[in-house]
Image (spheres, helix red, strand yellow):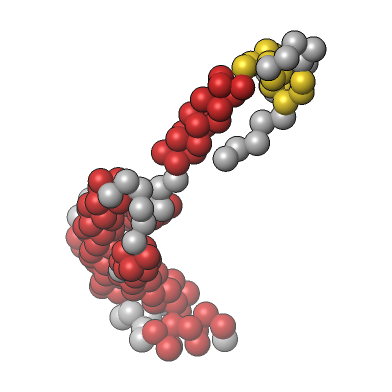
Length: 178
């Protein structure tokens, strides 16, 4: 139950409830106070949604991957001949893996939304095993995104070293720090 600051009125049986919006106290009977407390508790229960952070994360991930895909596709030259082979491979890897990451995030968001619907139908009683499953599912879109980042590291090393091919990952890190 949410505690509401109250003060006694000179009249018997009337509580005066302090409010942030009002200066002083407003008159409220004990029954009105109990009803208001119940309404506040019901409103607080409606806000409890253990699936909301997962959905917010997935929406952010989709937005991020969408921006990267738009940027990568916008950076393509007008003709394929203007793109060197290592950069074509890197750009292709980034676009492919970010698209897979976006697809994975979309599918996971669909599953999480389904789990959330079950949660709401059960009267907001969370099942711990589904929350743990949801944590695991949210890792899935990160993996292809990480692979795309590794392609970016390899492309950066190729640009710095002026190599005709994309270097292996170990060589890319070695080139970056040496």
